Length: 329
Image 1 (cartoon, rainbow, N blue to C red):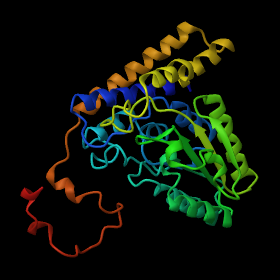
Image 2 (image 1 turned 45 degrees about the vertical axis):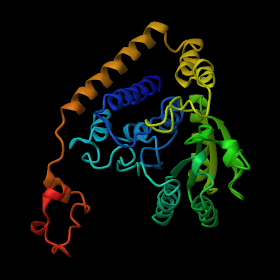
Image 3 (image 1 turned 180 degrees about the horizontal axis):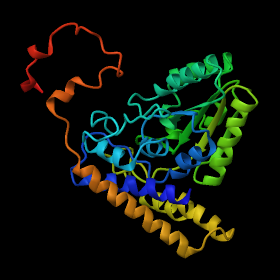
């Protein structure tokens, strides 16, 4: 877990540098500071469980079967990216990770639908539908709560409460900031999302609840913190103080927290952890160079990835591709 946390943080730091070098453009939301949630979740679930989220999806994509190179290449708009360079920061997927979605809160009912399919097909797996405190007031989130409880679906709703929805603090947008209590008849648990052991245990408990004991949905609130702004266009210092960010970095950092556990429990020495740090850095540095070396999509790639392979229609409706001037794009 320690190395994975280092890897996903360094990957996000690399994305930050590439963006500032103007090699990555457009929307880019980083999860630096929230590593205990993604890594803790992955170690608490089954490989065939499903995960869906909105922004800050890069770590989940890697942990759910993707690659660092694939994620960074996607951010760079390369053909070798996990979505062929067409999706960008918010649209990255694997067979068990349903994204990365760009519409605030819209992934929650989709995740509930995935859980419905799991129950309908009698699969003994769960879906973890993740959203932020900024999306918690969306009507479709509450609609998903209702349907999941009504049909007793194996849905684990996870609110990543990182204290700010864009530049608005939770207290300014929500009358009830105890998000784990907002599921109506769905039980909720509040978790220290800066502590990976707490995150891991909470996810294991939730999966037992929904899958092994078949008690239906559960709502987890991970109280966490993002060190950077909402996106790369947000410095993150106009609505909170630099002192606040520094205090969280120095007292609540999830990687340092796990390091203390490891050393106190005698699992590894400081030197062994430094070796893992260097290995993580080397892995990410190599991935950066591989991603940068990838080619950009060709104009004809505009017509690919529209349909699932094998489901393409025999006849194109509307204008034929020969009638469309590529000079327009």
